[in-house]
Amino acid sequence: MTENTIKVLLSDERKEKPQDDSLQFGKVFTDHMFVMDYMEGKGWHNPQIIPYQPITLDPACMVFHYGQTVFEGMKAYRTKDNRIVLFRPEKNFERLNQSNDRMCIPQFDEELALEGLKRLIEIEKDWVPSAPGTSLYIRPFIIATEPFLGVSASDRYKFMIILSPVGAYYKGGINPVKITVENQYVRSVKGGTGTAKTGGNYSASLKAQELAAKNGSSQVLWLDALEKKYVEEVGAMNIFFKINGEVITPMLNGSILPGVTRNSIIELLKHWNIPVSERRISIEEVFEASEKGQLEEVFGTGTAAVISPVGGLVWGDKEIVVNGNQTGELSLKLYNTLTGIQNGDIEDPFNWVQEVGMHTYA
Ligand SMILES: *Cc1c(COP(=O)(O)O)cnc(C)c1O
Image (cartoon, rainbow, N blue to C red; front, side, top):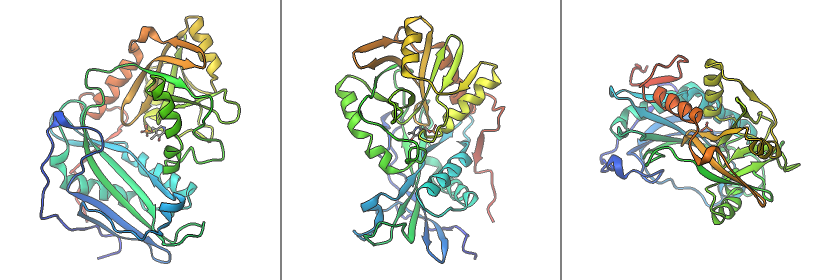
């Protein structure tokens, strides 16, 4: 057996699975998890699938104090013909290693992680729900486990993958949301950690999120940290504007998280010959386009919602309504196409979907 053979230890107990129509987000977890350890001098070792269980950690572990941690979010879907598929999973593991690089966490073998994930899902295949819009949410993450209070990179880490069956994001059909443009707090700044999926970015965003909620908004629209002028992201999603027939999304500038959904939307638009550009776009330009009647659609993109149409924007004392607070035609077409590809309902011209359970493992 080599260091990289995945050991499997099955659980004696199986939890009761929730009904598809009672599923929420991220509250219920499956029977098994993937774990792998890192130790300086030894590298990543001991990849295993074990029963889902609490982990015991020394209170001095570095992750608790200085937040050296990274994560990913992706989904497995059950198709109508009962296959289980992943959507561009290699992109997520690639991004996890990019986040690792920023956070001084050692690189792992992406192929091994994908193999571990596929084997885990095969074991948990009965947990993949089948009702429309439901899926199995996948959370890979890494934490720094050296018990040491010095501020430096840890010499040991734990990589885990846990799985959670989740309900449809849109229960009563796809729905536009109201957004508050955040003028005081910032999510990230060029040179900071905004391009990495690391815990601190999300704890830092809670305050603004709380204020936006008091304002009757469901999300925050983040502006650039230096000038508070250019649009960056919406909540934990990337953002797109359709202005006068052209689709615009902020270019990746060193403070924006490079979304897999964002990338897929851009490729789809190009495939359809719809003009799309990645460039700086100011919040002023968005409000001006609205005044001129040229702001046609606004939507966020991310794994959880796929497409989240924006029906209204509040910026200081100004407020605009987008597309009569209705889901735009292009937003809906993108949503239907991407979810259709993920569910195997429509053809996948890009080879984005990978089937689980079609592989033989050494
Ligand atoms: C995860 C995330 C996104 C969306 O990325 P996807 O790969 O499309 O799910 C966008 N912005 C932030 C801040 C994120 O954390």
